[in-house]
Image (cartoon, rainbow over all chains, first blue to last red; front, side, top):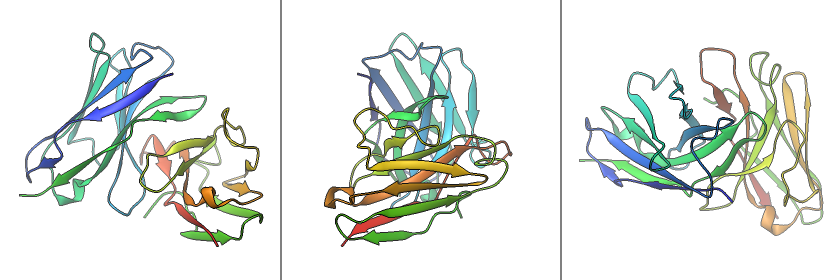
Amino acid sequence: QVQLQESGPGLVKPTETLSLTCTVSGGSVSSGSHYWSWIRQPPGKGLEWIGYIHYDGTTNSSPSLKSRVTISVDTSKNQFSLKVSSVTAADTAVYYCARESTVVGFDPWGQGTLVTVSS
Amino acid sequence: QSVLTQPPSASGSPGQRVTISCSGSSSNIGSHYVFWYQQLPGTAPKLLIYRNDQRPSGVPDRFSGSKSGTSASLAITGLRSEDEADYYCAAWDDSLRAHVVFGGGTKLTVL
């Protein structure tokens, strides 16, 4: 069964770039029928879709974050990554990676990783 | 402010039936499937309902989803203590807001 695992620094300074990687096991990021997504959840708040990438390089991201977000995929490592530039305290959140399909939506999800933006 | 509107809280006693509503618009729920996710305390969200009313394997049939127009509902029958969790609805969106929009979440308390 497919499993996803986020990794990256848990603490990022304001104005710097947040970088996370999601490693996929039990499946392939080269699957043509799936999109690989990032979703975040500020402490005590709801879910916010950040963006997705398809193995062919097609990306899409939330208009509210588009200017600061870069999503990439490394098929050789079976990973996809997220970069958010010029972070502020408002970017403090648990960041989840998830597989998305038009059939079942987001499934499965990674366990999530807390990223705190603080000096 | 979430694009999809859910009540912030819901509650019920063991064995009871509870429903959670999710209200949207023509650009999201009115045009697309609704998905429901369950987030147990301290864990990642998990797919609960897909394509309005379909249950993934392993999800008990106590959970059911429905959709009508620009609104959707999640119903839980035979409420159990382990159902205490946050529940989120989601749908694709045709506007410029985002590819997928979520509800603000409903915290379900089992009394």
